[in-house]
Image (cartoon, helix red, strand yellow):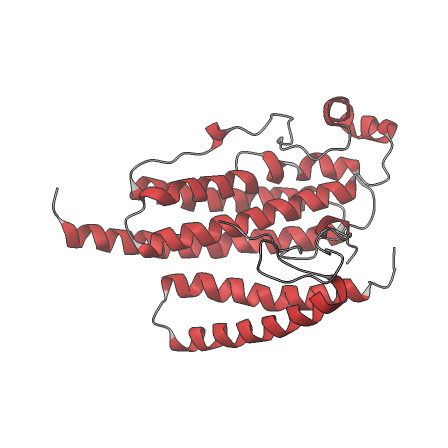
Length: 88
Length: 190
């Protein structure tokens, strides 16, 4: 099973690593709301994530639903693969 | 309101079909200290929490637990991919197959379906938070048991990530307990 992973999986893994940083900083800030360094990092990661997600969505359609991200025509939200179908 | 993100929190890889491993990993999908229990427990306890910090942490950790529920579901799904009914039977999943086929249903490793009896939500933030602290430690212990039993290095990588998250959540809940205790001491009106 030594397949080369797809371009989609590659981009997703990059988004995952930034978003994980954001999740971790978010939880830390919940209990350390006055930490300037963590907040600065959180805002920086948020900016990086926005750009990465924009790039991903140009190729593979919306990452999020309910009006949080626009779609090309035809409606691409229903495009496969769904997350559990992707090989990393 | 929740927004779904069409991605996993962490890449869930498996080396190949492995119904014997799927049978035990499902513990963290539908077991008492599994990810479904964790998510529902925290998201249910939020309503009567006294401070913004407590409400925020329960919301965020509860949400992350649902992402973990999805990761564990994905691991089980992938471990059963391409597995025949006979192979499931030989791996001890015959009873599972009879009921659910290859659907991913929340049961524990012993086959008991998920139940809300696994969780609690009192109008008492101190007892809730102690339950949450214990839940994180119990989940950590279960991941360690699974790591002891697993023979798939790709699955181990995902299990180690999930185990580590329990440790971080425990830390955050400890800080919330501190915050709620400070809040209670400052009130002193009964």
